[in-house]
Length: 150
Image 1 (tube, rainbow, N blue to C red):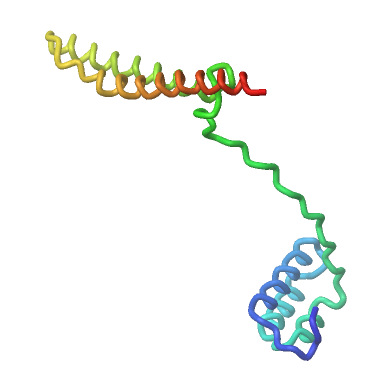
Image 2: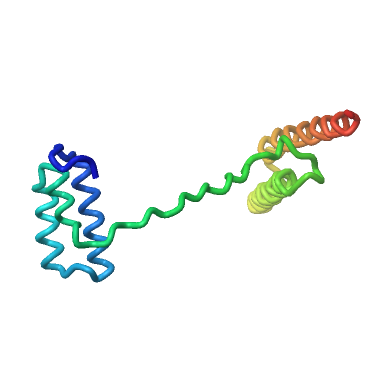
């Protein structure tokens, strides 16, 4: 802690309160001791007063900082070819599942009304399929050019 005569901030009081809670959880303090020290922590004005509340308790050992693993790219589909990974295959699979669902709904409603209605599934599966196809073709051409580079 900084010099004992300097004034403590709310964040300093909260940090000491958190330490006291950890020591209570570890069994080093009774509930009564914890209550007394917690009240003292929030009433403390200086670092010295805060330090006195934890002087007879072991200091927390700093944990080694671990760097988090890099996050996986979740949407790298446009950057991979058909055989490059599961993301483009998943996009096509999702399109096919939706296509089957909307075609089933259209078929069931057409059978129920005993007449063929407007073929509205084309507005769902048509544009989506066109975009997927264009991306697949463009991606394949980019992969081919990349293979030719030295």
